[in-house]
Image (cartoon, rainbow, N blue to C red; front, top):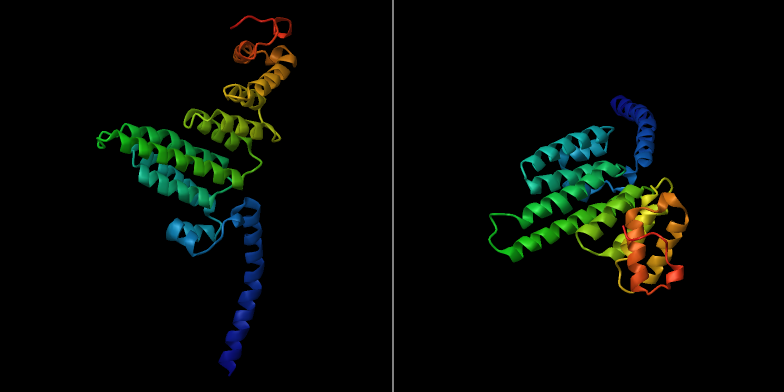
Length: 252
């Protein structure tokens, strides 16, 4: 009976010491944004043993950095499966790091997609194009999940806008995401311009694009860049804007 009471007392003492530490760890997880990721069996399978232990401790940042360095080495070897595996773990461990989401999308949607399209081991062009598109989709998924974890960071909206612009040639969606970036505090001034530029390529939205570009033009000399003037001139001709309402500058 004495042994039982001794064990119970030891457990109570251990619990009293452990609870404050667990609360502090929980607070750090919440502050870093990691509590948005459920610590469950599915996460354990995605991260592996080392990553999952890191997720439960204070070593997430260090382990994520190690995985990121390993991903760079895999990229140099063009081992795209390994790159994807490691970057998924990195972003799960550090979901509040904009750099990791952006780099993961870049590796997939730009580097891996180009490698897939030019893969000498795949003789069929249709399969190469299919693989290229799959890497686009993986890159887009990284950026969308990155935005979910960092909704206040304009860089990821800008990256998604570039993806739609350069890979999907979807100017309307590109304009939409540049506009979302522009609406955030601290966003660079070019986001508004880029949103209007992309809209100027969209059939049926030329008048709206012209109004937005003209608004920027009327703000003053600082906004009157060659690209902005060129797109206004293009829309003036397409919309048949009266001569007296056109801007004075000549076509760059």
